[in-house]
Length: 122
Image 1 (cartoon, rainbow, N blue to C red):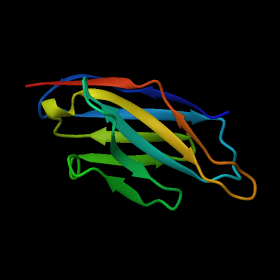
Image 2 (cartoon, rainbow, N blue to C red):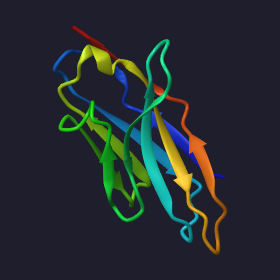
Image 3 (spheres, rainbow, N blue to C red):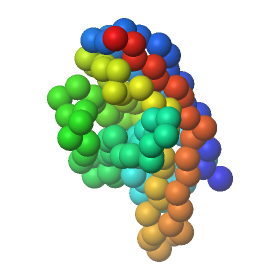
């Protein structure tokens, strides 16, 4: 069973930086996984922030391009989200998501972390 543990959230002033971490356990080495970060601000729907696929390609929401960077440390089974030049509109609960792809050895599946709060003050 895949399990996710997020950390790194906190409170910063506008222009500051934070690095979120998502430690993943329960990997099956025969499977391919896509790693993603989402966020949900109070009163709003959860939205995609950034993702990395098993081939190493990355994607970003337009609102965070040039400020956020997603990366992976395969040795530590951890995915990171480096967030620079944070703005009040980045305030949200940030969630890590892992999507396992279907192949001959693996069923598809999606797993979410518990979330970590990021608060940016002006």
